[in-house]
Image 1: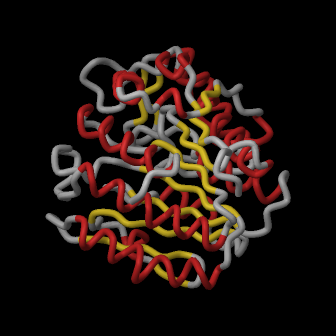
Image 2: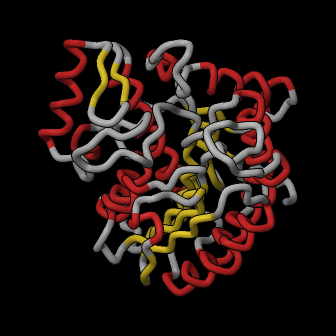
Length: 310
């Protein structure tokens, strides 16, 4: 791919309308801090900015059945409220969630067309915990699973891989795509009691790590466990569920990654995309709730996506 093809940066101001409150981990300050950090460094000027449209309901329903989508909409009538397992619904949640999915889809389309070499979608709420009929954590719609289905069903990509690096396992994505051989799902995460978070087969590769694991263990999981399985799958497109909660400053986990660690993790994933997918990669913001470490780590992530060395 030509070196002058830009990296896309997808965000929308209406993501901030999903505001569960100042004490909630997934607050609008997350994206605002990212934007402030990459703007002050000059990195934002080197990216191709894009505001997405809301995802079409038909695309959301490739993963979430109509009854679930209706239930999310009905929750707005009694907002603020909590849907299922800790998913807060406020007046702006549905629009923000549909923009988050729309951003994942539009970024995938533009990378597939060659307009962007890769992209980062800085929209919220996140999605990798959301199951087809269940909102979980801070996640309403599973944008990674939806984008994967759109790539296969509507855009003609036969094999899509998803690599999820977050403190929490992306069990929603794993369960949404289970049994479909068009998709490969891999996750590096802190050890979790759910047995599905340890599942491995030809199309699923989970790498649970012990408390206090650091960069060495995280990179070993990618290089030694995920990369060989991904190469056998031979994907044509790579999606990243990019979470930043494993940073040592983030109290949502006991992991000990540093800001620089995310540069190296990103470089490992970019190398796999270059090797197997002609560089086609879209990264989606998932977790990471300590604002300073989140913004600094995303900046490292973006520098590598934009051509910096890992």
